[in-house]
View 1 (cartoon, rainbow, N blue to C red):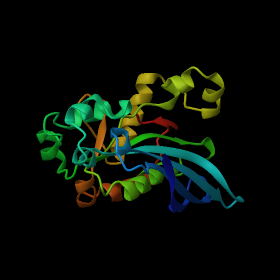
View 2 (cartoon, rainbow, N blue to C red):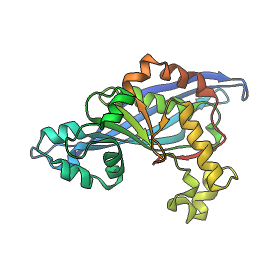
View 3 (cartoon, one colour):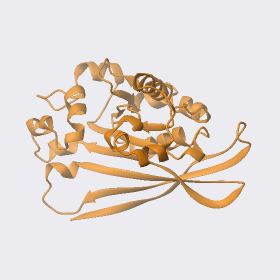
Length: 250
């Protein structure tokens, strides 16, 4: 049995863009799914988050769907507290997070690897994964995407040691590359895969995420976010959206 928990709408952006000469007010409404049964199982510690992004402009008084952001809150620490073994966590309590577990955590202790602790000053064992984000063509290059990412981290990140993502352009995922109708609707820029990946990784780096070696994973330390100005940097760059308009991060 599960329950969809609605999180109140949060304004992510209210600004006038010089390029578009348009007042944009954007918001994101989150829904989080969590189990209510008494006997916890491993999957109960992975919470799917869906944020529906809406926006309206001065030339249209009606609020319109502007895109969506998907994330996962993974409670590794709570899972171990409830008796989930590190072996089970290593196998992946959810297939999509197994790679993060293996690269970020010590498989014996269940805690962050020493090099991760040293480099990112992490505490706690929870992880927020930004799975994907898509902004509709009309609302691109207005800062809506970076603002939605920042707001997602504001709300769900404080209980986590790290925020992680794996940048990969939406147009090169099976869901879009095999569906011409969906790909046409996405209106992704004309760029080769390598160039698109390079630009998308640079986009996430500008938002304060650091590449984890050559793994393709990018991470943001919550402890360092406030102290080193990552959040301020993200807000400053909110109006400088990448030309890469179709975004997938995992």
